[in-house]
Figure 1 (spheres, rainbow, N blue to C red):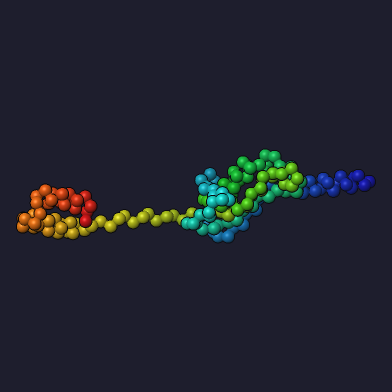
Figure 2: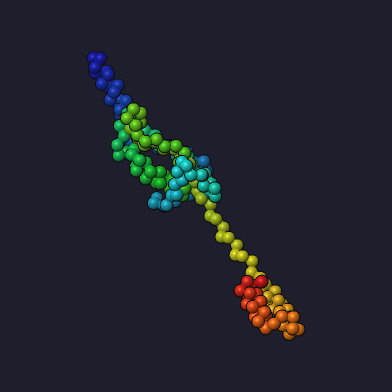
Length: 169
């Protein structure tokens, strides 16, 4: 009788626990889902968090009670799921906060915690200011006046004219 009860308790524990990773996603901001195979830039633990981004969710991959590890919660599988869950949450970047490889005594799964971000579009840099055409024309006239008055030689005029036209100032 005691063996039978112990067997039922063990079966119930394994049945409740199952195997594989347990994924928890906590949305902190609304963002529309992205296509399921969207590219996700991953910032590893040593990398700084993305500066031009908004936090949209927090995610963790744990293990269920009784998990023996294997393919269901391997490093590669968890990283693939990280990408899939990020896209579902509307994120295109992930910052790894903590990770742990499977251990003989402890979790048999690769464990991971990350923040999921939506990168902001960076505005295109403004083009450098272009000198007004009238400024260039005025300076050319000034150079011509200097040449005609004999203050500069023809060779100096041509050199200064070329510099002026190349710089646009």
